[in-house]
Image 1: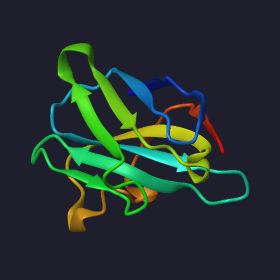
Image 2: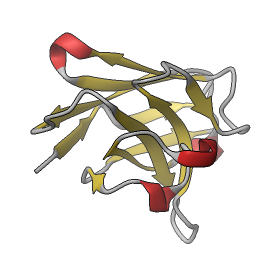
Image 3: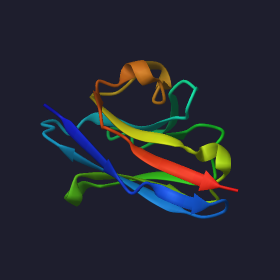
Length: 127
């Protein structure tokens, strides 16, 4: 059973930075996809960033391109999301997600493609 534990959320002023972490436990194969998602109050959950270990490619929502960076530290079994130039509209609960194997069609930001989810970490950006 794969388990994910997010941390690193908090409150920051617009223009600031935060780095989210997601510790991953219990995975048994080295071919997998991971992603960061977020959900603001009253809105649907949306994909923010994702990657596949097999190809090494990263994928970003248009709203965060150039500001957010997804990365992984294999030695620490940890996924990161570096968030720079934060905006009030980035305020949301942020979740990391995991699935084995690749995702057809490049749908690395599709919620339905991921099987395992963390509990979330809150990010609040004030203007």
